[in-house]
Image (cartoon, rainbow, N blue to C red; front, side, top):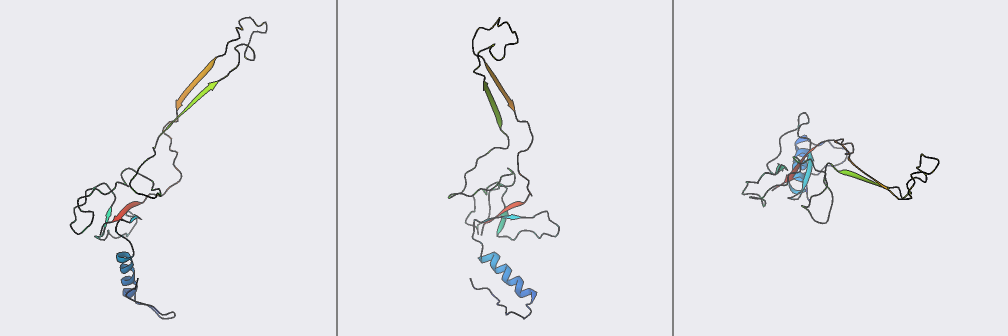
Length: 154
């Protein structure tokens, strides 16, 4: 990739030249279809360039884009983590889940649990305890910092 401006060590670069190089890298160096994180609500963040859209599940209406008419993935509204794979587009996981517990004492009733020292009432049968419950609504997510996912569409 040939940048518009080259710089020599020890010389001062003009800010416009640095900006030209940065714009060139953004335009040419990031392939269409790339997803990136964006600090949309961060103070002084400029609006997105026209080559990028937020990943909010909208149908793209842009005749200059290879994705014209396609639905952009909703990576923001569903609060998804991104995960690497050899293909793209699959989803999975769940924000909530249940834990079930089954306890099989396997102990003849009355042997170690018999509260009657005479052994009366000990019929030698096994018994089971089945316990289940909900983990509740407490989040199990690791610490995070929220970003807005964006996609290059042209």
